[in-house]
Image (tube, rainbow, N blue to C red; front, side, top):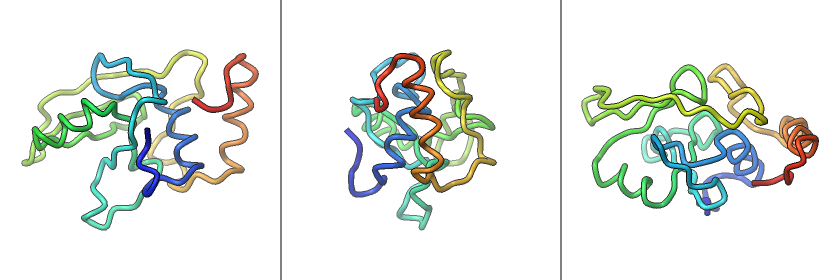
Amino acid sequence: GFDAELATPDQKIALAIRDQTCRWKRCSREGSRCEAHHLKHREHAEPTDLCNLALLCPYHHDRLHQLKLHLRMGETADHWQLKDIHGQTVDQWTKPTPPWANPPATRTDSPKTSPVAIQPLLGQRREAGLPATA
């Protein structure tokens, strides 16, 4: 599951709704079995905001750190890049969310996810016949 000390309950819900699965290329591990990964590490005083988080399954989360690679979100939440320690892109892919999900959050969205902002997302999941949480 998520790193409970870092992502708030509201952020966990919004992240699970946005990402749905592990964001690694061709990995379909469901979001409830994934961890919140900081795209820019908190050791560098980066915030724990939704725009700085991505779901990764434990295997790919460990692999990312072992290989000393960095996962980066593109202009939208469905475009992903792997970068090496020098900032060079070593791989990139598009991983869309399922068709019933909300449009991907972009970097222009509010970095803070409040309960008020999440309510419409939960309503859309209910309308689609899906549970309110992933």
